[in-house]
Length: 341
Image (cartoon, rainbow, N blue to C red; front, side, top):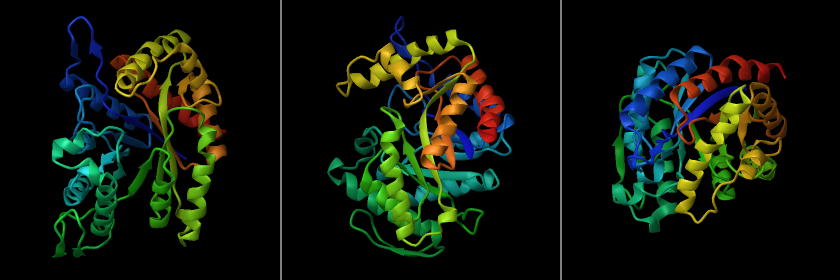
């Protein structure tokens, strides 16, 4: 099973200045962190896309390209590419270029995203929310599998015997994963297409997703795909420290981000009881010591049969040195423990 780390580039808010942390500092910290991930044997890094003042990264492709130049082995993925408001031709071009820069390490996670700011920003109507994604996914998959593309849809101009360059290394084909938050229709679509699946489990209890993942497996097989090639990942909030004081202190970072997002969504203020409950065996937070996090990941493998776990590790913008230590422990201690369990 592969272990990865995901980030959104969270920016801490300074109450004294009324400003978010400088995005340039944050991006340079992320690059230092990805370099360390590669050194300690993390298998994949996934960089998110947001178009808000509280996140540093609106263009994952740029950060991943920079990371490609300072790493050797780690796979580099978007986490996620908000495909509904992206141009599939440009998505393929960017990631095929990344694939060539990194010598075949690029991957795309496509999804609808958890925010909608990109729609008005890029001139798309939310009335077309579902149709935009489905149509663009169809085009992206066609570009990825065919060198000469002839395609037509309702919301984008048709393509007639056109080729998108450059082509990625593996006969032009990039790994394209479908990232979902729990919608059965999205899972069904991924299964029918034979796409690898990433399930975001960031609240409640992971066991609540058992039926959804079993549904994916059943439909994947029913569609005639090779079961030995099936890949399933989960993406959950993660933080590792063998110092209980650090784990307890991280609550304040986590709460700050949850409350900032929750304020626009009508959520009640985040509590220590929720934090501790999430950290329990049945909760969705992979936050604790190396042994605690490893045990919980092993339980996810037993529960779902996952082939990849991605720990989302920068919620609330922990200090750079704290992040570096969490990454080091994840690679040097959590990964070997998971492999040996």
